[in-house]
Image (tube, rainbow, N blue to C red; front, side, top):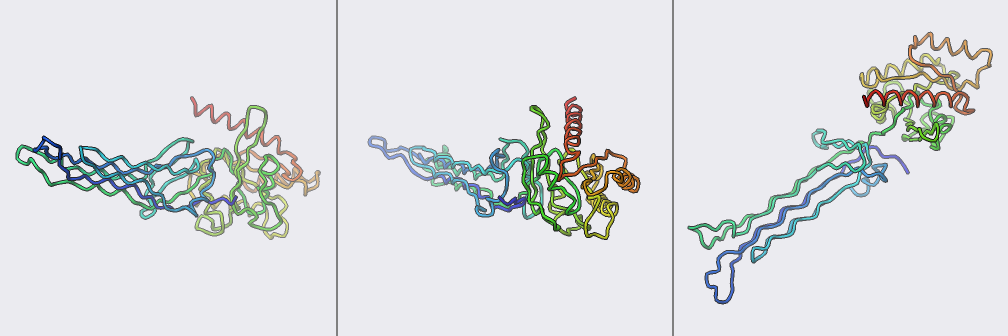
Length: 342
């Protein structure tokens, strides 16, 4: 299924039911008085984070959601039924904004979490409510108020522990294929990955983490170039970034260092939340370099980048070095979780 990470919907809460003007008419009770009941409240609309929903694609075909109107009041002081609330299922990780103003309304991160997005209208009052010592036969009633109606914009933030970062064709899709059951499309041309892919990496029977393959970032992505801008925001929730570099780029005039610096520059422009996030350097496609030249070749890249974080050498295709990388990631994530729990 194609990944849709943004959608707009219209939500319309139910109107409140109207009050009613009626009078008690029973045999032997000539002065029965008013008995008009109140209307029912209109139904509200809630968003609910649901486990078995993982995209926003359905909102492309079902973009209007309505709650039930409150029932009008009835005679004999009978109150109208409240309108049924509507629950709209969204994936965990959905950010909710007011479409017209851009105001953030909420953030649904946990399965089962709910968010009120449109309040139902208040019920109208029947004429019984207006009876007084000087108004024995009130003709007044009130109408129910209108339910809220608004346009909402959803953004789905990929919730992953680790994000893969790099230029197109750096080998991100190949890596996620080699370490998880995810099967993103892989080819020898740029922009192979058009949609994010999530993979679960199981390092042993009891420990696992989620890794996200993000579409390649190109120069100018922070200003809207290419596909990267749409998905840079997905990296903000990851605990660790892996900067994947093709150490032997085929058919490119740029050196691996020049390519890496472009990505680093885009992170700087995007903001400190990404630039200062823990980031490891992963030198990919080591199978394309002679064994006796590999260490020197990789060290030259590290030195020129003045890299101070961890560095790993892998071949995603042959899976060389990937197991050690996955265990190092798991240990890092375990340490971070322990720190956050203290």
